[in-house]
Image (cartoon, rainbow, N blue to C red; front, side, top):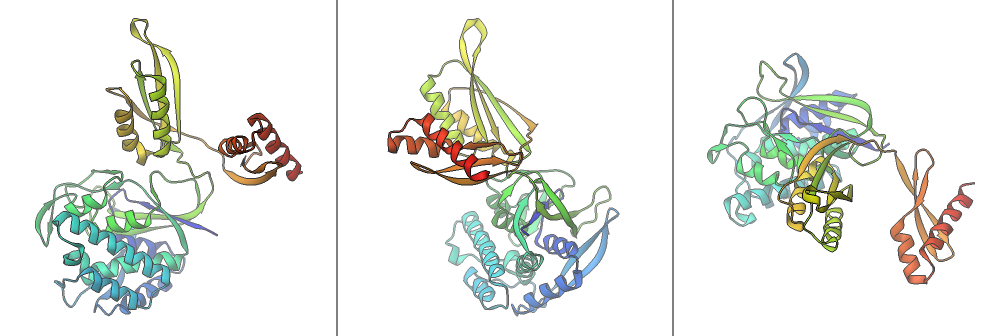
Length: 390
């Protein structure tokens, strides 16, 4: 059964919080902890690992500890990747851990304006962060996680003390890693999302947004280092089976009233928005002030794509402002079925309730290539589906 893991980063995310949460979510916690300890031991970093049951604001959670013999080891990316490759890890865990460090290296290189080969990993290259990243990737494998989705990340605020001195939150490397991802700041003025946590989330999560429709199988809580008096400083992971269609159930709606743009440009803007991931785009005629005819442009998008949609609307239309708001979208689960017509194969979209419709682009392509009227191709596709489904 495909297993989804949702990262609920309402108090940020760090590597140790993620390892603790995954260990906490497993039905056989000792076995998961042992697998993580054995995997990290094969890296030969000298790190000693342990797990502790703690409470954060009355919430029971697992705290992942890494004890080090050397605390200021500096390593280059090539050295870390070689360590991972030589370790006794599941193959996909190796690939994921290497990808996370590659993403970290690219962010550090961009921030310091040096070639990636010259980047010295300080906190993120020390044994504790190697243990965090490898431990998380191994835990995902032991749990059987096949897909990861993350909430928007709470990055915190204020300043953080690093090997490069006192830096603003989010730290420069964290900000570089989270470019294009949804973030916010809430709670105490401390760093809540670390570079290691950000790298794990952006590298391994397929998407950022609200909790997908799912059947919950387990949940786990990983404790952060701070114990705030008014909020639980934990990362929650929710494991389960997806039950709905892949589209987000919470969406962003963007609207603009436009009265000074040609229909051709509006049509092009619609195409560009759809190419960039809009769930739907509509153009509605309307009467504006002073009797001017205009068009209402409405875009439905995933919350994490909202800023992309905003910038595309401003770039491709003449509007100087737009409205955005959040709405709930209900969708049925659906799947695709291929049917054969006398003129070629057509994909049929079939809903959970049995409604069906041929894919327009397939029918359009066949009509153009064969010279058969589009309405006939659509009718033949419907007939083929009904005939095969009896």
